Length: 281
Image (tube, rainbow, N blue to C red; front, side, top):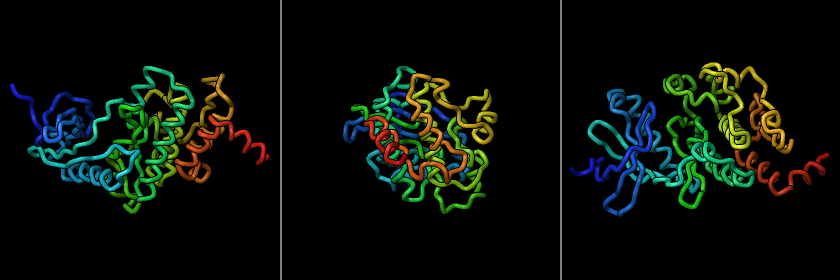
């Protein structure tokens, strides 16, 4: 029996499934390489809004063309289901890695560096990712990190009361206070989420987990940022300072860009953070 096909691509296995789409590992016979194919769920194909949303994700990724963002190769239609073809990231996700091993600070810094570079490129083009989390950070065969899944990405020029805002909100553990409130977002919302990723990578758990999605989301608004030293007392106190800034409730008090957060992390690893503090003091 021949393998099922999506377009010209031969499906090998299912990589993952979400509420909106399924991702398959497939083989491209034209250039003899493995690819990942994201296919809109069949039950959503009758809804024009989901069709538009799915195509917009492909367009957003294609427009970015950044070395720290998983690239898109192709877009097509499988019956009534639209799909797009992406690079297959053989190294799995940051979520997978964090569940299996404890990363060292210098490893975390390299990951934050690349994700921040991708985010700043997206923000420069008026795109907010809105779902930065370890599951959306993937690795290639050499261990380089890439940002993926712009399914919730929103162009800043869109109206805050557009329909898609009510349909997709993000992942509760990583949502900024303004995202929970459904306020207008800018790139600092992604900075907040990257701060949560940093917390998780260092502590082995997210800062807020209130037992339900709604309670966890609300905690980002009502609860102070937990001191990571209470969970990991052996860490340097500077990590608490950096996370507190990245996760400030007021966006104006956060790092203004993801790159600024990455720089703070990098300077802690190099020791320059302490020299800078001495000069500032």
